[in-house]
Length: 133
Image 1 (cartoon, rainbow, N blue to C red):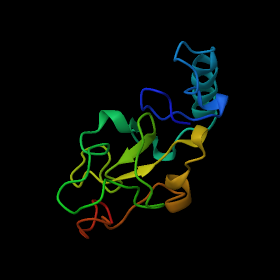
Image 2 (cartoon, rainbow, N blue to C red):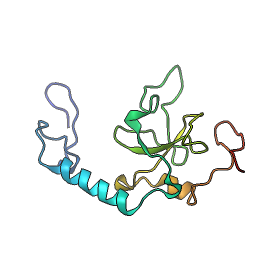
Image 3 (cartoon, helix red, strand yellow):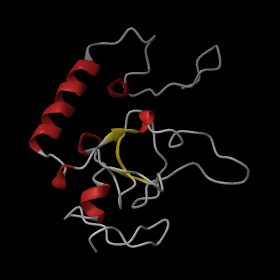
C-alpha cells in the first residue's frame, strides 16, 4: 500500500507496519515467542548467533555491480533483525564474514538444513580447510 507521503507499507496487520507505528503489542509477543523458541532449539556446538544488524556488511547496499550479501544456503539477502551464523568455518574468529541464516522463529533454518552437525570442513568462501579437519 502506498501512503500519501510516498512511504510503502504492508497491508497485513501481522507485519506491524500498516498503521502509524504506535504498535499493538505484537512486538513483545514476537520477542517472547522468539526467545522461547531459541531456548527450546539452541544451535548445536554452541555457535555464536548474531543479529544481521550487528554484523557490518550484511545489510549494506551493494557496491559497484555486485549483489547485497546473501545467505550461503538459501541465497536470500539478509534483513534487519534476522539471526545468522557468521563465517560458518570459523564462527568464533570470523575471517570470510559470510553468513548463514539461523532464525527458526522466522522459518529460516538454513544453518540446520545445510550443516545439521554444525561442522564445516572447508570454508565455502576461501576454500581453505578448517582447523581440525
